[in-house]
Image 1 (cartoon, helix red, strand yellow):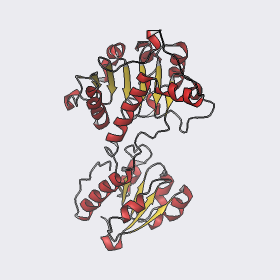
Image 2 (cartoon, one colour):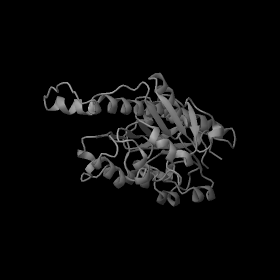
Image 3 (cartoon, rainbow, N blue to C red):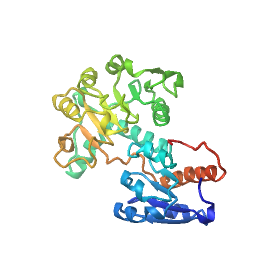
Image 4 (cartoon, rainbow, N blue to C red):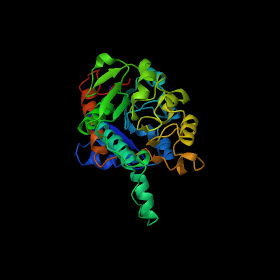
Length: 322
């Protein structure tokens, strides 16, 4: 049970996000503080009844957090939390699932457009002050999306929104989700992960919008890449470990696929020595697909809803994990 509002203390822990400022703008009167480093969080977590955190969390905080009763994750992913240990101590956990569905789906669509229209090459040419001439080879010319097939692996909130955007460009959309009975979610057809080998050869673009689970870890490996068309593109706005990176690099080097647009990689930041940095057919964004000027406000909205439920003694949270 949470302490009442006048005795509650919230810790906002993030290196960059302006969570405290966004929360303070609501004039709730709830005591709170902000930490920007892991060392600060280690020192002060014991003061907090509620922690709002994502990447700065580590499970060594649990024995230091004697007052902690609720964790509101800033991100959708919650792999970093020791859920059995939190549960044993009566600490509730909720994710921010869906908070960035619009942003990430728009980012994915931007990456698809960038690869089809060769925008990374255009930016490189601008930096070199090079005016590229017209291209006679149809296989390397800019392309249109209408009539192309997009295969979305992970037809949840983000995947469903991406499907809606793709349909506006007259694309054919194939969706893969754990349970097709969950609905088409704007796709033309929905399939199981077991059907992926038959779907990959049909796709001009393969987009990963799925979470990292035992089923999706390494789902794009050498075998999957080998089934994709040489003219196709891989777009990953899900999790880096859903792709076997050495297999992707090999496929890109031999021309097995036309290119890849990656918002996430197996190791982040991407190591300076990775071949992906310098591949002309790779476009990298530094896991910024979910970042927008609205992000903090969206998270605080979920936080306030969950605080209200806990104060009322309700057991069901929004986006519950524990």
